[in-house]
Amino acid sequence: RPSARRLAAPNDGARGGEVVVLEVSTGEIELHADSPLELQWRLMLTPVRGAGQPLVADFETRYFHMQRFTTVSAALAAAPKPWIILHQGNQLNPYINYPFLTLEPLKAYVREAHASGAKVKLYYTVRELSGAAAELWALASLRGEILIRSPRAEGHVWLREHLRDNYTAAWHEALADGEIDAAVVTPAFTSRWDNYWIEGILWLVRNLDI
Image 1: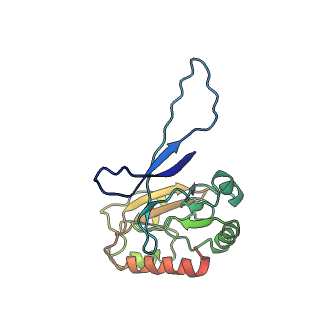
Image 2 (image 1 turned 90 degrees about the vertical axis):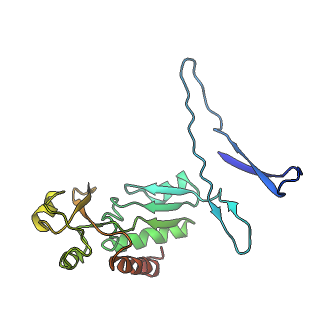
Image 3 (image 1 turned 120 degrees about the vertical axis):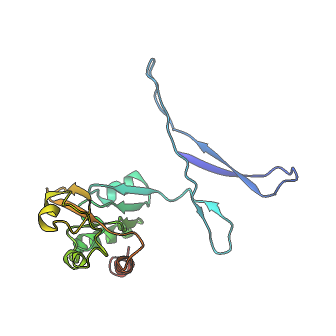
């Protein structure tokens, strides 16, 4: 359990101001003879800038990273008022970089999280795209502009059978219901697909209140 307190910096002619002392405690633990105990922890300072305020470390924000589905109440039990990150592959955001096919469950989850004081983020980026994307066949027709080509069929069998050689295989994952999400490689910040991705973020903000 980390805690921080501010102290006045010593007046030694150097730059004035304050210093922060960080104290980290495990809380009460029980030790047993001949049983080694290894303590590991990481310190990640996150500077944030307020309106005209100096940089400060953010010790309040907590992230709950969800690979498989976890209820809002379980996330809140792990961290008070967290940012819940819905990674690709879970039931609410199953398809990598394409969170547009499970909208109603997502809306309900976001509403519940917000009502409980939590916030929600989605794994949604560039570089690879789920084979479940509705735009896949249109992108495949653009002669390698969006789907990066490979000289041979590779990756998951669905990609090999359907796209043949007009793609490069990326991540694939077995979802909770047994479906396979097979992805293809897309450019990162070098094509028109970036505009589509940015518009996708805007759409999610407007329609899911992410």
